[in-house]
Image (cartoon, rainbow, N blue to C red; front, side, top):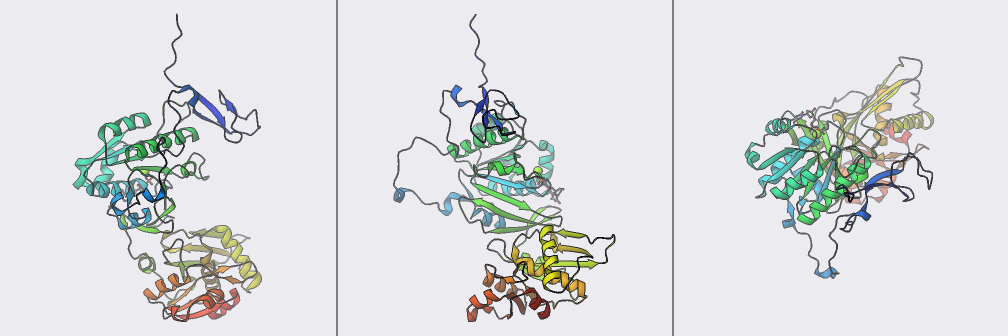
Amino acid sequence: MAKVKPLKPRSIHRCQACGHVEQKWLGRCPACKEWSSLVEEIDSAGHAAPRPSSTGVADGHAPIALADVRELSAADRLSSGIGELDRVLGGGLVAGSLVLLGGDPGVGKSTLLVQALAGLCARSAGRVLYATGEESVAQTALRARRVGVDSIAERLSVVAETDVERILAHATQLRPAILAVDSIQTVYTPLLDSIPGSLAQVRECASRLMQFAKTTGIPTILVGHVTKDGGLAGPKTLEHLVDVVLQLEGDGGPYRVLRAHKNRFGSTQELGVFEMRGAGMAEVENPSAHLLAERAIGAPGSVVVASADGARPLLVEIQALVAPATAGLGRRTAAGVDGNRVSLLLAVLAQRANCDVLDRDVFVNVAGGLRLAEPAIDLGVVCAIASSARGRAIDAKTLVFGEVGLAGEVRAVPLCEQRLAEAARLGFTRALIPVQNRLRLDAGATCGLELVAIDRVVTALNAL
Ligand code: TYD
Ligand code: MG
């Protein structure tokens, strides 16, 4: 009797380091001896159809002159009705694009997604297909009602499905205006033996969804979790594949920051700010004013910095508390800023600025639960710590920014004028800025602020 050919295409294991192919998974590549480098994939040799290009861009078209290529216009973008989100997307969701919305578990990805889908759906004639592998249909409906999307509930179809082939079958049948998959870590293709969430599955499923988006023109949004260790099988793996990578961040407080880490259709400098409320994510149009609203004026250890992670400056309060050590060694606790950076700045303060608090407990916090990663906030951290250590409050209408070097020097930062303009808008009167920034500034660009040029940390502490 003739042997029946298995229906399932074979899967192989390819070494990510040297490209060696094995039939079964091995802990170590026999060719290059690299550990855990073999990743499962579908054997393209066994298929009649050619393997699609890794970007999913349609093959087989004749070359075309650049002049004949139509430019992306506003009509190609669909607005979500959420201004902060549209801006980060570069003006709306582009037809046929694949967007990855990443972030820590619980940060509000599904909430923002369902709100965005409602807005997008309201502005298009079609339906939306929301495939959820994280929650049941009932849970998804509950959330959707909570954030008030009743007006388009008729056109929002939810399916609790994790098989990517079946999700695509539903999408092909329904022809939605937008497809959303929450989350990419829960979907799988039965063509691979690896478990959902593994590198092989995440990559294969995302690439299937990418081809779907590119061939149908249906914009597709994927939700992805960032794993604690940066996540090999997490969104990092997908960054080269997708068109847009949005990252939703929050550090405990009610505020969430949305950034574009990659955007093939817009700038990566934009920033969207939201507040998580009882009925979903609310846009924060004037984030600086919000973040400074509850400031403890006149209290030592509080200073306002102008942060500009991206093109949009934000005024944020940095708080520090220096207290006697509870156990022998001084402890450092940092929320919203990098703990290692705080340790470095404490050493600079002790060695270069005569403010030694190394044997005390030091707590540093960014008010509002934001996470600040740019070096321009260094001077703020230093000033807040010194202010708390000395018990002297910093003037409420003074703002600081600047990068601090190991020699105790204060270095120039980008976007000085934008930071000053934001400060002036919020009623600040005085700013301590790096000397090099002061020198480069045009005479008329002071925004009406009294500017104090700072070359060293010591100068800043004396000027406060
Ligand atoms: P969720 O969107 O489920 O997060 P993710 O998809 O990123 O894992 O939201 C997580 C948290 O947000 C949850 O703890 C409850 C809270 N939440 C609100 O505060 N208000 C709301 O309207 C909703 C829907 C959720
Ligand atoms: Mg979720």
